[in-house]
Image 1: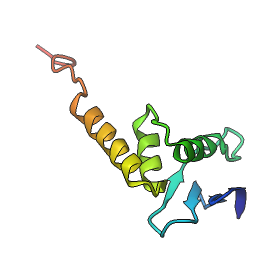
Image 2 (image 1 turned 90 degrees about the vertical axis):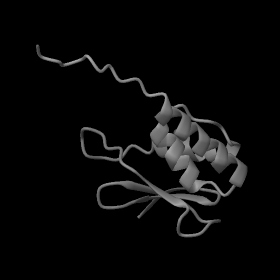
Image 3 (image 1 turned 135 degrees about the vertical axis):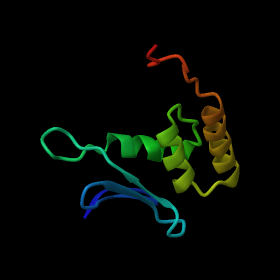
Length: 103
């Protein structure tokens, strides 16, 4: 069931998730977003935010949004910048090694 259409982007309701599809691309240019409200209805605000990021080639701050944008975009330079940001975030993750140690 189509919930929203915005140019070449469509938001569909799947069984437990929302699917954002870039119709200008291939099958690989889609992403699943899981966002439900407490009453069981779907909230499409994150999907609309991802579509806005992809249309205007904006750089999101959160890694799951970066991954969704990388899947939806057709622009190779934008996809490369997103993948580099994801790799940088994975490298610099701080882990406190002394937390939880019992003596």
